[in-house]
Length: 260
Ligand code: ADP
Ligand code: MG
Image (cartoon, rainbow, N blue to C red; front, side, top):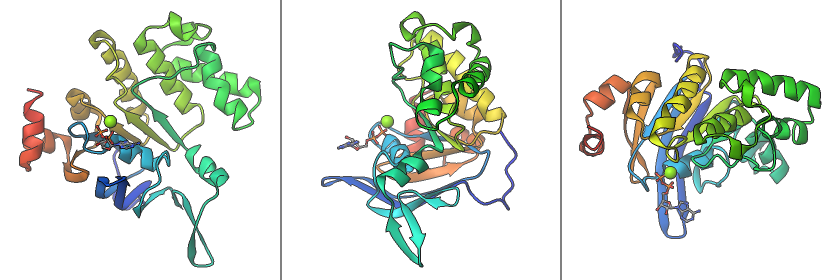
C-alpha cells in the first residue's frame, strides 16, 4: 500500500466503458481511475462484469464505447494528426506487454519448470538474453518465496505454489500494472493465505494493482480503495473501512452480508 498523491496523473483511466456480447450488455458505462502505486480491489456478485472489465483493460476484449487509458496510451487506439486510429494487432500486443495478468487458473506450461515458465516471455517476446532473464526470474522466485522450487515442474508444486509462480511469471515482463482475476478462487482454503501474503508484499512494494477477489480480509488490509460492481456498473467505491463496514448502497450491503 502506498500513500497516493492526488496531484499525480492516474495510471489507469477508464471512462464510460461499454461492452456487449451480442445483445447482453455486460459493462454499462464504467468509470474508474487508478493512481500509480494504488491497490484497488473490485468486489461484486458473479456475472457483474468484473472479469470482462479486467479483460478490456488488457485488451483481451475490445470495448464498444468509451475509452481506457493506461499510462499515456489509449488501449487499442493512438492519436495521429489529431484523430484516433485503431492500433494494429502488433501495436496492441506491445501495449498488452506492459500489463501483467494473473487468472484463477494458473495456466503454467506443464512441460516447463517454474524457472522456464517465468523466462519464457522475457526471452521469447521481449528478446532478453537467457542469462539476464534467468537472473531476474530468480529474484522474482525469491520475492514469492520459491527459489528452492526453480527447477520443479508444475505437477510437483501445490496449487498455491503454482499460483505464486504464475505471479512471478506475470511480473517477469516488468509490468506497470498488474491485474488479478480471482487469483485464489481455485485454491484449497489452506493454500489461499500464502498467495494473499505474496500479493500483500507486492502491494507494499508499491506495485499498481487491480484485484478482483472475494477475499474481504485482503481488501480490508491491502486495498487503498474498494470498488463494488453490480450489473455492469460501479455502484459504490471508497476507503475499504468505509465501504466494507458501512456501505452506502443496499446492493453492497446485501453482497457483504454473505461474508459475515
Ligand atoms: P464476473 O467476472 O463479474 O463474474 P463476467 O465479466 O465474467 O462477470 O461476466 C459478465 C457477463 O458477461 C456474464 O453474463 C457472462 O456470461 C458474459 N460473458 C463474459 N464473457 C463472455 C464472452 N466471451 N461471450 C459471451 N458472454 C460473455
Ligand atoms: Mg469473473
